[in-house]
Length: 175
Ligand code: IMP
Ligand code: MG
Image 1: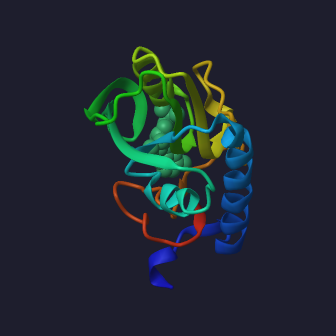
Image 2: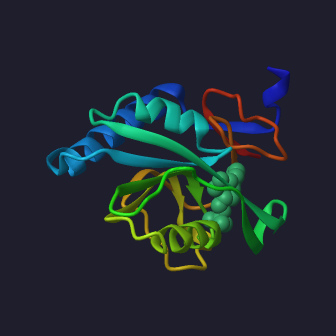
């Protein structure tokens, strides 16, 4: 297919679906006994396919909300991070889980985690579909991880290169 020239398949649709199911099970087990609603904070735009698939398989009452971050340097997240869309849900006393597509340097998730902690949630955990450990610059650890990947630039299933390739149903590595 012309559109995928220069892309090598990394995780197939089936691998993603299996991993999402496993993650949903892990999350359900973790919060099962809390008897409380789980607030799911989806990081736009990258995590939106992931969140849509995952949320439908979490067997708990959840409240879905969205947050959008941007960095000054475009593709490089070494710049300053700002929250361009905030959540609408009050987090005080709530169990909150952040859903992100990928952790790379950790700069954006560290920023978001610190902003949300200020709101005094009862608990705050992080779930990422992909943990790219090779370039980590911040002490951010995800509590729930789909795939571990050492490096490269990935697209598809929500992940983009300058807004392109998000809609691909599988995940590819740029050649
Ligand atoms: P970090 O702040 O460096 O951890 O970067 C986090 C954000 O950068 C992710 O949520 C993605 O939106 C984006 N990002 C990092 N690596 C990739 C990649 O390989 N493909 C697409 N987006 C990426
Ligand atoms: Mg992102």
